[in-house]
Length: 425
Ligand SMILES: Cc1cc2nc3c(=O)[nH]c(=O)nc-3n(C[C@H](O)[C@H](O)[C@H](O)COP(=O)(O)OP(=O)(O)OC[C@H]3O[C@@H](n4cnc5c(N)ncnc54)[C@H](O)[C@@H]3O)c2cc1C
Image 1 (cartoon, rainbow, N blue to C red):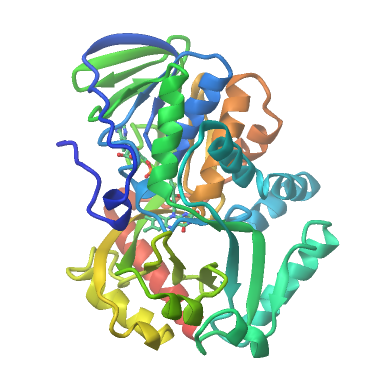
Image 2 (cartoon, protein in one colour):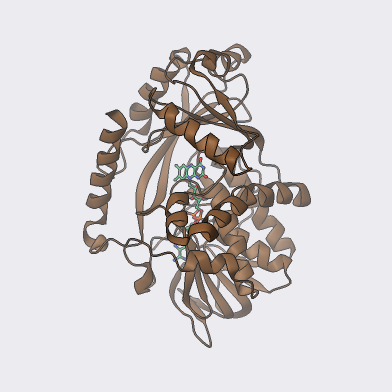
């Protein structure tokens, strides 16, 4: 497998750290070996280093190469699969969901302040009703959150008030969450990696893990090296299950794609998104958008239902963007890119233990900015001996797709098509 550089994107073009870390040669030892250099892996490595452990991090490509360096940058409260967690764990599940809802935000905000990470964090996130009937679910969600003591800050925007919030007639109201927001994901990931290195974490890029084992003496083998550690963490949405039966058929990749326009004028910005909100629509197959710090429209969503990369991302996403914001008809598209969103059938992030000293965290279903940081803290707590929250995730009975190695792509494409049709009906 040849290591790859960051994909050409708005994020890679505006990355503020170009550090290259060496590849691993030979054998090294550490308390913790983390596999994966996205949010999950980097946040775990940083947390464990903050707690005084020696850490080695292995990244197959570059730090932030995967979804963490390509995403929509929406920092959204809560994790996916909350209903399933409550169903399976009752009151303990409801408490877990409420307690961790903004924990990822707190960790990210804390690290931006503590380590001086520059990643364009802005507060303000909105879910918009793609159909009039979707407002019912939005109102019910807000009412439940208020009843729960966790919703007073949420602001319902009635349909007639939408023109004050967004310059489009495509949506039928929505809810603003001022505690959520948006940021430059690649710069957050690179900033956390820099902080980890400063605390002694040894990062190896262009170093894919090829085999591993937990148990009494865990190890990870790479192409030209080996790590011997007390604990191994499969840290992220890595679509290789390392022959671990529990990871088979658990996580399925689906494509999501983003375009970035040229920087927009003050007048256009004021007309389309005067509050600088990150926005996601209420469909299951979501469209999402926000403005970058240099005022480009970053508009993302799905291109097709075949689960294959489109030949021309711009050609399929741009018409949808213009459909929502006709004001952008003449805006030049400067960047177009895509990545893999990791879907778990029951939507609960997969966080658990495969052997006494072998952990995994992955599968945030498009909500990974916040959720990966929560999961990294929960796994770090478990490694350090506090397992209350970890055990709730580890005990989730996930739906696995049999034969997903052979037919996962087609099954997911069919599933997405089903949800798209449901969104349209
Ligand atoms: C286009 C797109 C838009 C998205 N938008 C949003 C959004 O707006 N808000 C939100 O919350 N979430 C969003 N997401 C989801 C979010 O980005 C992810 O959930 C999150 O980044 C996952 O982080 P991770 O560290 O688990 O995985 P990744 O960031 O994918 O990192 C995994 C890393 O592991 C490395 N790796 C793979 N195999 C190996 C190996 N064998 N050995 C060593 N390293 C290996 C990869 O190179 C990669 O760098 C989006 C995702 C995509 C693709």
